[in-house]
Length: 506
Image (cartoon, rainbow, N blue to C red; front, side, top):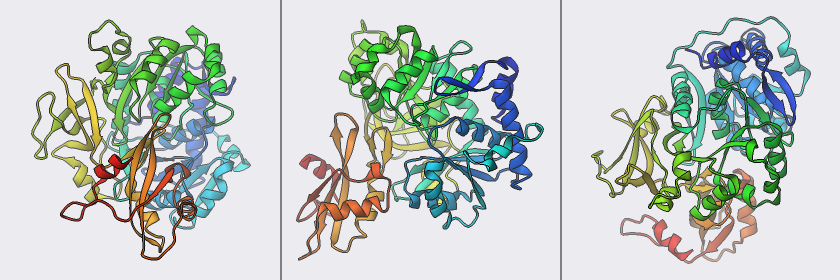
């Protein structure tokens, strides 16, 4: 079973419907997209000499070529390694080296950065800029048959930072992606044929994962010409391609409803906004429902169980007459149809409603493991269950409320930021004795990064030099927005830094 068979089915059923659009213009129909992906797959195996299971990375600002590349990879029986376009060169280097990617596709804005990163990835043999003749030549030739793939074959390496500061590649199989796709129809939405999905969020993450179910229904995948999220452009494209579905981080929803151009959105242009990746304030959610209508659905998932742990349905968002409507809005909803979800104590025993414990998940969407990291896999996958590291509690209705993150993860603008990664960088400075990074609530971004720093005796230390150090080593969005210089960090009797006390200071 090859996940690319979804495109084959749509090419047969929706052959002349638009499949890809660049801004307001059609780029390819479904029949044309299938042919191009098929011919490109021939180049991947012939011209580039790739074999079943080889990894192919891409670092691309959102564009139509991203979909072409992904389906060509799967058509050839290869494994895709999407990389967040906002990463630092060193982060790209780690992913390229760890995945063993042999080929990497790039947009021109990232070509220099990937070339720098490639010096530390000996397996990488070639970089292809999607605006060059080298890429254009890949559509020359005749289509080839879809490659065979087992349901357990890796299809997508989803790199997500870990508490050690090193990214981990969640290995998503063809079965994982198909189960996620079918779950969309069971719990999120079943749109009629046609319509659109607007990729305002990065294709390397949630928006890209939602491409599968919408492609299956013959929707056109729309990419803003700007390659980024601009509210006026987003509204104009929703009006151009109705009815439109899109995945947004809560901060993106907030930007949409606070921008004046939202008044230009026609009621029939929007079908669904699914949001996730971070908590959303109830006040913002109520305002979004007032402005956009009953067209919101929430999801809670992880890269390790993509887009599929719990959901808060559009119907529950709309049920304002329910006596617990606001409490429901503050929850992450009910367990998805494709998984079992439990809240457990440290021994794995299920906890009753109202008691807080770790959230664990089991089902066909749960990853096969972390790529080349058996120790991390053994920690996260135990007795057939994924231990998420998140803690929460179910209520009597079966609604899950997230309480905290046992891994101290910070979510800013829908992006996961792990303190250890930033602490490792700050500790490189010779004047830093020790440091600790925590999240601080932020009205727009959800959370922002704050670093508490202890300077070595007699050494001067300022925010500017620490900022420069972070910018040289991690993505810009991960750097601290505030530095607090303190005499000492609060610790328990075992010497562990008490982050709860640091958060109280904020």
